[in-house]
Length: 363
Image 1 (tube, rainbow, N blue to C red):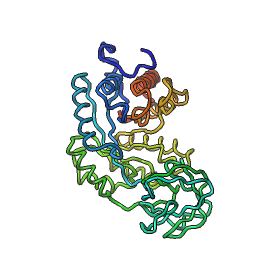
Image 2: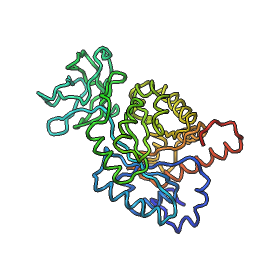
Image 3: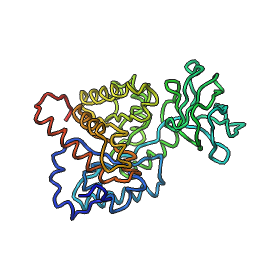
């Protein structure tokens, strides 16, 4: 098959027996480029085992239609495909801005506040407070995963005065991170509770809670929706500290490396990933690894060699599922991405079989 083919059809895959023996699951996030019938069929035939629905994006009508189509095509293709609903969770976000969008130029003065009053183009509020004694002059504030960077000049419990270190466009509700200095209220917020009940009514198989921080978060989700399996997403320092207890409470953990790398030192992310996979394996729980597994394939039809090694090593370490996000949500080669993922997984699993039973895994 040519690298630039957008989708597969059943005529191009005469038999699916090559999928039967694979143990590591492929989770694909759906988005504008992958919600069509033809592309969904191609994803299923290429090896997608689970669909991820982001509750942060899309309308409920879109989610209803997508789930119905996935189930229909899975039946037609003769392959089971599970549904995972990913709750937005307690990601800290900026409040409103005049006109919904402003430009923060390098050198500008910006005030972040806990109050929703007196808002201007360079003064807005944050969804969750910060820990004042951890916000020091010179601390970095990352907006939109670091697309815009602020430097703290001074801060108290009510206001944080910053200088724009790296400017750019900022819109309402952009993600906001002060590494190591953000606190969350316990339990589910109202949006997550509403989305959870909606997902349960759809009959999803799994629910992932973004920014889970403790074993108690499992109880909050399970109390509202006892049927789906509950996956805790590890992307905050509190989750790293509670890794063992969270692995014991949740049905599985997902290491969400993108947000996690904003909250802790990026060189520590692989350590957390390996620890989470090991803890899940030890307790017989599901482990997932997410973010930038095939990041370059949003544009390219071929993977970077480091990405191939990343996937291979995650499988060898014992990850039960690998999660594709932007690569299949809005990238140029969604089906090709799943094919590449499948090929690397199969290679890693053959290696494990040849190496013998030295691997510690829950499988």
